[in-house]
Length: 164
Image (cartoon, rainbow, N blue to C red; front, side):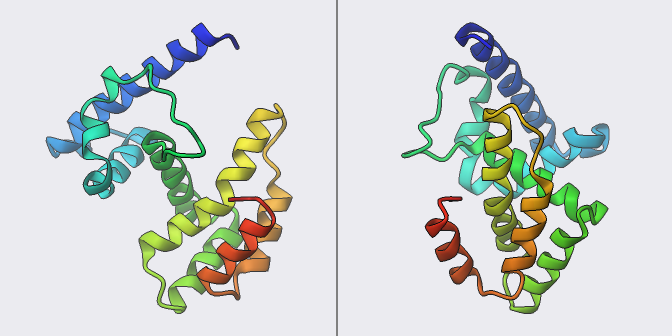
């Protein structure tokens, strides 16, 4: 995929997300379905954090986020939404089990979803970069491995293995 194609895809995606943001802000979530509804809900959950980025998403398609110095709010909400869908479907069941384990440790729902996302995202991105299928076995293995640990220990371990 060439640079022009990537820019075009980014423009289309951010325009769509801006449209979802406008619908979400207006409180019209019932007019949405499927992934769009999930994304709009997640955008509302993150409005304190990313309000400005959502407001001008359709105008900033040419901005490419630096992975080393900037958090990409659009990637963040897409990963958050993907984790929410996994939990709702209980697929993989290990994500749901991990979620329950963290909640029993008094980790907030939102922080638990982000923690799962920190495990999920690098594997997803790696698969996309290498044009390979998502490594579900590795994901399940990590969820099982970290289920009994406290979040700070999970982050420490992930940093050592360069997953974050």
